[in-house]
Image (cartoon, rainbow, N blue to C red; front, side, top):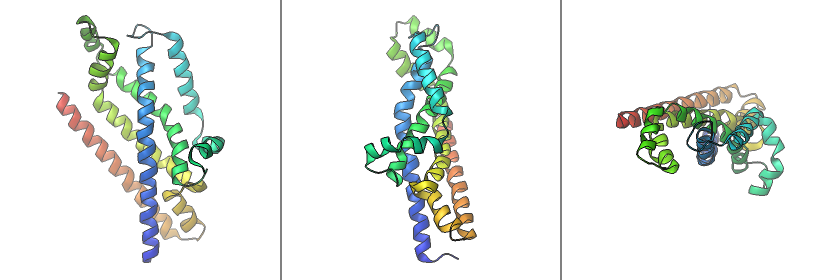
Length: 220
């Protein structure tokens, strides 16, 4: 079975994966949330109607979502090296992970905000609320449970992306599976990696679902 050194490597790899996923997800939300808001509020007959801006942001998001992650990671290596000083390792992997997640978050935010009852927005407009007030005090608060679920799905996708990043030098569980499992013909290491990933995804899903439910109950 596993000796103490291998157990330490497994724990370290899990920590690297959590680090990559956590940081990239947080940064993606910071950039993706406003983009999603723009996609909704600038569409036709909305509070900040602007077809040109809407189409430009929509096209950029579609392009970002259409690029396979492995290709994206290789293509932006010079940019990654510029930001982090290297193109390999867990910190370097955060750059392509974030860039891949931003358009995904933007679409998730767009979908969540569309679910808000238009009557609530109209009521806010009727009492003279500004577009900024409608966004910050109506749209986002009303969509919180859905937004939390969207972030949860994003984090789960990033777990999968992080394993691909690890397979080509990004560290984490993907690197563990390739170097200590595949290359050394250790089926037990491969199996352990899969089990850890399954448990990690289940944990993220349960945590996100519970938080969304709690926030939804508070709203009601």
